[in-house]
Structures are given as C-alpha cells and as structure tokens.
Image (tube, rainbow, N blue to C red; front, top):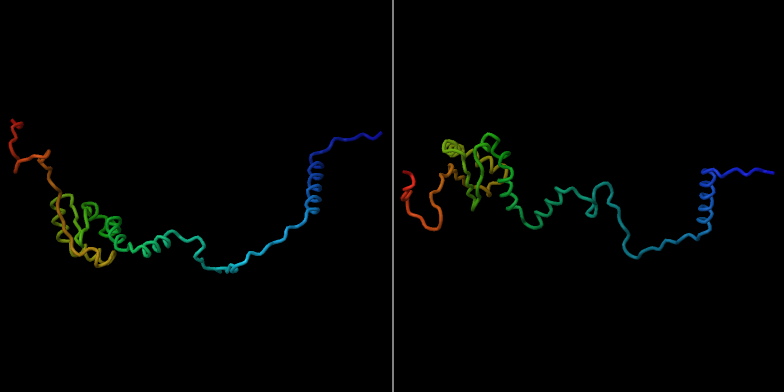
Length: 166
C-alpha cells in the first residue's frame, strides 16, 4: 500500500501555473489592427505641445494669449511690493491704489510720509526698472488718516455740537 501524502501549497501553486500556461497557449492570439490616419511623430528629447508642461510656462502662455500683461504688471506692483522697494521701506508703507499711472502709497506716520516723498524719485526708478516704465509714472504719498467724526447720513461741518464731553 502506498501512503498518499497531503498536497503541499507549492505543489498546488505549481499545478495552477501549469494549467494557466496551457490555457493561454491554447487560446488564439489577437491580431493588431492599424488605425488609419497620420502616424504619431515622436517629439524627441525636448517636450512637445502634448507633453506635460511646467506651470509657469503655461501661465505665461495664457497671459500672452489673453493679453493680460498690463494687469499682471499692475498686480506685481502690489504682490511684490516688499521685493520692489526693499523690506525697510515696505515695513512702513503700503500701496493703496494704482490709477492712470499714479500709485497712492499710505505711510504709517507723517514722518514716514515726508521721508517717502523725498525718496519718491528713487522708488519710481526701482519700479520702472522692475515692472516697466509705463505702469507707474507718478507716486503720491499720504500719511495716516485721522478718525472721522461723521457718523450716519446727516452730519454738520466741523466737529459739531459735542455736548457729551461735559
């Protein structure tokens, strides 16, 4: 009598692999069909138009196509203010509006407003060199604004009657 030993997992796996190979060999091979049309040309070492592009290149292309160059220059004055004028000046003032070439800059104090008025030609030169000469043509510097006494739709000129002070 021969004693039958239990099947090992490796024997079972080997038998399943042999059965899969035999089934694969028995199946007919599919033929490749050619699609009519132009053949794909390879782009080579450089990226083609259908290859993934860097985001910066795509944004530059979009700005050029949509003619947003003037808007991006204006936005760069506000977005890169610290880099354009330097961190020392940028810490004490901020750009407020840019209309028709005039940049309104609000200083944190009247002393800094006076200092910025004296530095206006050098700041304009920095802006012309970095952003372009036609974006900012004049620089108007104002100091901090005082609190307004006007409250509500009706008001009187001056401080008006203040009987609550005593």
